[in-house]
Length: 604
Image (cartoon, rainbow, N blue to C red; front, side):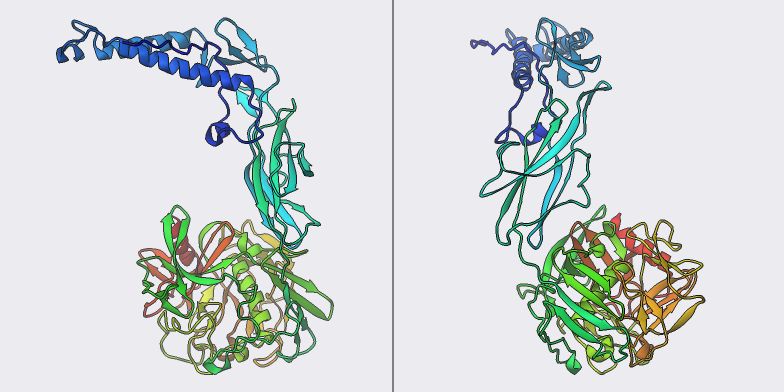
């Protein structure tokens, strides 16, 4: 039946690691001979088995001979059984270990069967590539993160041990080996830079830098490289300085950094004045979208919306925003903020790129669906203060639905009012594309808890009613449960606009109400009858066991470097918290724990 000689190859070799099988040969790879032997021998063995099976069909002259009865000429099943018997015998002879033909570990040494005898592998084996290699550009710097490979263990014996990872850098092209380019870092601590990253500084903005990571073993064996590139660009850092002792909400705030000379945004009684802020890096790529839930804590943007009319897609065609296509959300790329206490003043700075002392805590909350947590709120408040250049947000942007309406407004009332809207009337307002940022209903805020002695406990995940597992950021300064108009805040990157003193008024300092109580959780913004109490700095605390028609929640989703905040106060349908237009009234009368369950149900 066959006329060609099989490409006999009896040296069993060694199967490469899975990373090499997935990625194949790469430029600069120096594969050891045992890998080629495995490839050739496996190919030979596979062809041999196929030939043995097919040769059993020679002489078959009728379909009757192909039955499984075992009569007459050797049947197909018998031929297969013969091959299986050979494989079983082969394994029993001890020359087959797991999936690697002719491979074994003896006394911590890796050996392979060359067809005649067991031989120790010379030179050693690599441990595989790094994974999750990323490069994030900043101002004259690039932050590199990666995960180092594990040791290679066979039959309980470590046969290749990771020693370190070198990262090299070039311009114009990637390094081709571990000696090509500028050595950026040689890390001997496994996963040292998997989270915080290594910052490569002193770079030139506008220049693309090419990075290659090379992992190596104790025997000095390198695997194939992993590549990333990034182009540093100049950061725009917008900021304000606030005079703690000046009670006038307008004059106490001045622009600093790249905001110097800017004109602040104003609601202008329903006719928005952008000031100097339209098209700036501060607002870049913050946009409305319909986010489709994929299940399992995953989601993707179904399509983006017209920022001036949410009933339309970005291209002007009709959008479905009643929940059938997904939740209506605001997409917020990474933003970094920094609070600095200067004694009688403090500063707040925000940028879309990393800068010294800045944090991105809003984008470090746990992945998946939740109700809005504290650090998400804090990011939007920092942006709000800079845009408005005032600590009286109702006067600067709009009153909101706060002056005693007997009914709650339905969701979607501001769909055609752009990304920012406010007036002097008792009507819904909009900030950063978020409807009812304050007013209409209060909004539970997860991830912040005041302990029994009023310490501030804040978490990034595993949100709960007691602050369990949260980080303690110190005492709030209140000796008893206290509420009033906020005139001083905690400040700091972690505690931001949490009230520190509450002896102001509805027209001075922060012009909004605040409260800190022992064993309590906050809600935000103000409801339909809060009047002057409401606004962008309203933060009141209450027992987690409380529920009421005036208290709602807002959906949030985070994955990787993207954060999504519900455009609307949430609607619970089918046991899930949603962000949809057209609901007659946002859902209320639930505890924060019940809303938390409804929000997390989206992860199923």
